[in-house]
Image 1 (cartoon, rainbow, N blue to C red):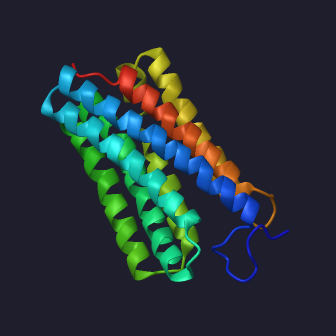
Image 2: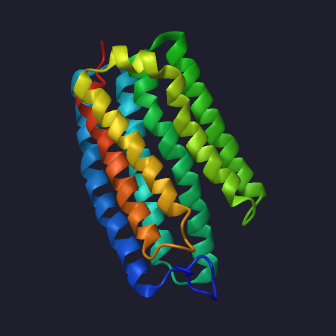
Length: 220
């Protein structure tokens, strides 16, 4: 069963596309509130690094949801493809931006800056890769997304020690949500409404990480 419009693989059936738009539009509205809360918390509680880290996470959160909304909302094929590219760029920045508070505020020091540099370098390389391979090798981008997320495995012991139990649980819930979501993302040919379900898991993952970062990644 093909879950996309047969005339254009980047279009979804009307009902599903409506759900795709609404899910990430409302998530975008929520992300604005999250951004305001993050900035206020950073200014009131922290150092410049803390403010930078929380602000970065808030910005990439909004970018991910608004680019996705514009992509799924657009009916013009040319404009839609441009928004699709921005949507894919935003996934890279969202992953790197999610690491930023854990790296710079949680880990700190050399280890934190190395993690920060690695994830943002991969994000930049991934964006450049998409620019020069438009419409090709999409599976490689998916592997890069998953690979960026998997980097945290090498910091498991650090995260266990730097995060309170509840903060660690919310971090894990977010990672699992994204991972399950990827399964649905890859099931375009087999599962009806798969992309909408993917959106729901992205929302769950991103806001789980918001809770972990907002409440538990605190300046020392």
